[in-house]
Structures are given as C-alpha cells and as structure tokens.
Image: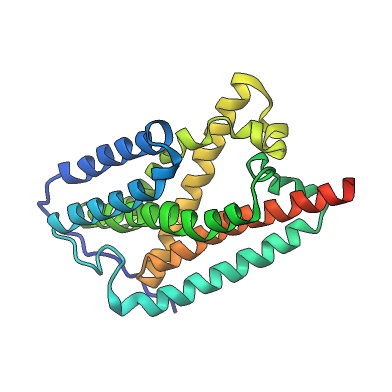
Length: 249
C-alpha cells in the first residue's frame, strides 16, 4: 500500500505568500533565460534555491513540509534510483528504433565536446535545473499551496506553474529538434505550437513529479526522475548524433 505524505491543511493562512513566490519565480526565469549570461546560471539557481527556502521557512513550513525531512531521505533515494533505472531502460529501447531515435536529436548537442557534456549532465542539470526547480515547485510552492488549499490544489497548481515556467526556454526548440519541428511545423506558428506543447507536457510531468514527492515524502524522488529525463536525454542525444556522424563518414 502507498501512503500519502503531504503537509496538513491549515485554515486562516494569508494568500499573498504563494503569490510572492510566483512573482519571484517569474523574475528568476527572466533573468536566467534573457538577462544573466549562461556562466552565471548555477549561481542564480543556487541563490534562488536558498532564497525560496528562506521564504518557505518564513511562511511557517518545516523541512518535512517542503519534502526535505531527514525521515524521508531514504525512501526518496529509492524512488529516485528506480526512476533513473526506468528512464534509462526506456531511452535504450527508444534509441534502438529509427522512428523513436529521431526524438533524441538536439542540435545543441552537435557541437558539444565530451567535457562540456559531462559538465552539463552532471553539474548544470542536477545542481542548477533540477535542484532549483524541485525545491521551487515540489518543495516550497507545493508546501505553501497544500497548507492553504489542500493536496489536490497543490498538485494541480504547482504542475500548472511548472508548465508555464517552460515558456521562455521552449522558444525556438522546434528549430533544434527535427522530430519536434516535423510535428509543429516551421515559422511563428511552429514556434507557438512548440511552446504550447512544452507547457502541456511539462505540466503533465509536474503532476508526475508531484505524485512522486507525495508517495515518497521527499523531493529527492522527483529530482531523480527529473535528472533522468534531462541529464540522460542530453547524453543519449550526444551519443546518437556522433554515432550517426560516424556512419555517414
């Protein structure tokens, strides 16, 4: 039997702290995607994580409320390891077939060195993207919404905001991924459809990540799944692109 591990709903809490977190997330999103140079990405992500945790504590959330309690670290690690194993198996199977192999193609990987790939997959993704986004959406924001509006609204609200978080990063992705471009088309229409598709799919992923957090009691579980989809996705894309180039020669 699975148990549901989530913060208890409390009546009478102010509505504005979650809104303040959303405004803060909007600012960080714009800075990361349009203002700060890529070299400062890890700094902004780490600083944003610390700031969000501070806001969470000021709002009255405990470590456990935010999915960071010591009691649930081991279950979180087990769920994370299982998630990474499942994703690896899916990626291996998908890379064996021509139709699904095209989904791994990402032009950003074409000119990337092995060292840069290792840095991105093992440093930037886990300690930048995954750490920040899971603390923000499955940690602090989830806890604040659950204590005010209950578990269902916390799952739905954090997932929807997670989807909207990906608007800026998804602009132009249809030009970098041929499989995506073949689905949404080219030009402005293709760009709009690519953004909408990204928001929809990442919102669904947010539901899945939230479910893992609730079942395990720890943000480590969605962190594992999140890193598996992103970090392993980059690695598989890099390997498959180079395998294709060797066959072409």
